[in-house]
Image 1 (cartoon, helix red, strand yellow):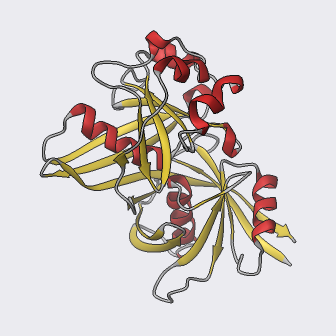
Image 2 (image 1 turned 135 degrees about the vertical axis):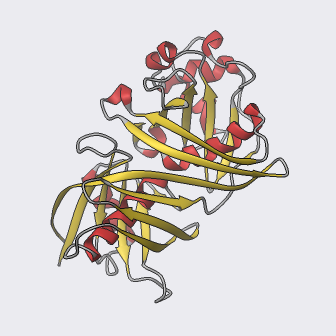
Length: 303
């Protein structure tokens, strides 16, 4: 059996930046162990397996794997897969166009809008399938700082404090005072489990207001060693979770708020995500995440 595969760079408009993604088409006959083995072989942050949808009105059913585990939902696979499937359908057409994809994922059905513009990298945007909430608690600042190689005094800024957020996946959100401190952060495995394993999080999402680009609102890094991702260049599901912290700590008024998050710079993979929050009656009404993607490779996977 030979299956078509593609790789894309997501949350970037240029190749060899952003977050790499593997996508395997026609995966209906693959077993779960085979999918996990292929994801480990691709060794991307995530690999997506595309199958026929359960509902014929939908675009595709997808399963998402890190090198070591399956995820019910992830942001950059959603954006990258929607862009790939749209461009493959339109490969013999030219000019601008918009499309709506419905991807069946473990967390539910996700509607993704795709914009194709001549001379530009394709853009996709989706509403978060589950609104994020700040739930549960994290260990003290000393333990968190030790796990990410920082000093306790480097954790927190303004009124932002560490928080645990859930939106399908669960992340530890850790504010860092400066970009210089954030640049020093690293996984300290000897302290990692004590800080994060008991909290049941996918990874630690560190962020600061000090950015490389003045068009960005936050600069972020994400570490998930227990999921086979030492560091991620761009983490859409974490950005969705982060929306709850932005609302809570920045006390956003009712209305629509757009924030650009930059990530991946420490890895030489600059990435940009657009996070749009709609607030009504002091609560999140919708959270939308968007970004661009470009195709990098294609080939046949021999099974």
